[in-house]
Image 1 (cartoon, one colour):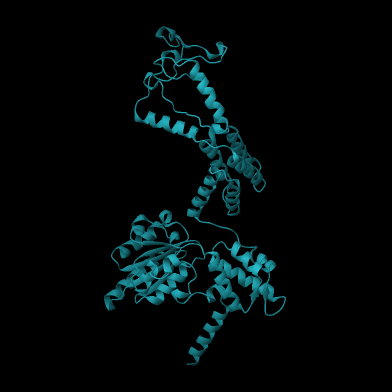
Image 2: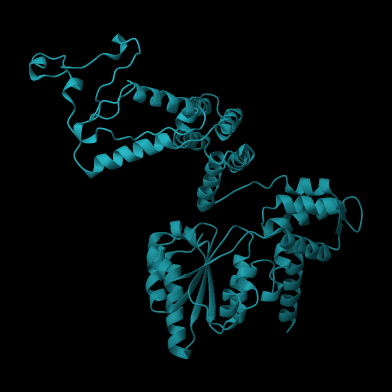
Length: 443
């Protein structure tokens, strides 16, 4: 009996010393902040948990959105045995032991088993393969949690047998609710601008919000009791928090970056550039994407854009970060504010598609190489007119194979420099369009 009392007292003291995020961890679904699309009235995940009908599932979302909390709530709501492993340190042997216990449990008393696997994206293929047969036969109900896109990190057979539930970053109102609960738990108050600052900087991460609040309260407590948190306390508490994102967010952020520049929004382009740099994204990767965009989305509407992007790319290698952030920022602003055209990209895509559909046409005789001995006897180069011999710098002659005469792959837009190109091409074609021979060239 005394040992039980000592154990209970130790548990209470440990709970009191636990981080604020752990002390405020919800004990019921109603206490969960955010994720209304999954846990609101009649929402799918809530109904499955409350009915104890949850089948294998992957909880996927950024850090601090409640994945582990939901798993613990599943443990309290289910009549199945609940086992937990972390993919960081679990081995294939651990997985097989869980499966063996689950099989014994089911045989002896008809009780199923739920396995919560935290950070499932860290499980190797062999570990996932060891788990798959038990999931397939229904012996184990898997509840995996991951910050990474499961489509990139979970084996397709295991993924196909699991329901995906995506958790979203907490909204501003959700974070304010967490802060209010935290202040009550800490016996503290906070200035409104301090709370605003925390909510803005937390990035939808509930755990980070409560961790920063706990540090800020400790800092404020040095000035007196009860603690009153001000903005400088919150800034100091947040100072050590580094921005990070996973592989799926890597693709999402670079997609937003490219689409912002393509959409001629320099402010958004700079914001996403800053986001990537703060997250430690490879600056060379960013620069390569800008070089591609310069031709794909701007092209001849502003031919200098490729030069600017390529110069920024060279600057990244030559100067390096942090100074090269200036070169990348200049390139982003130039590309975002440049006139846009995808006609260069469409030209090569269209031409390559046509080449793939069938054999290429023969090179017209006037264009064939006539420099080697015997070439002229074959008619190579016969009839070729040298454009520079003409005062116009251009002569009408056929450059495409006979089968493709008249085909147009590059059609300049009316944006930026391409408007001038369009006028020039129209003038050349108007001067002479050989009957039955199609377009001339400007080379």
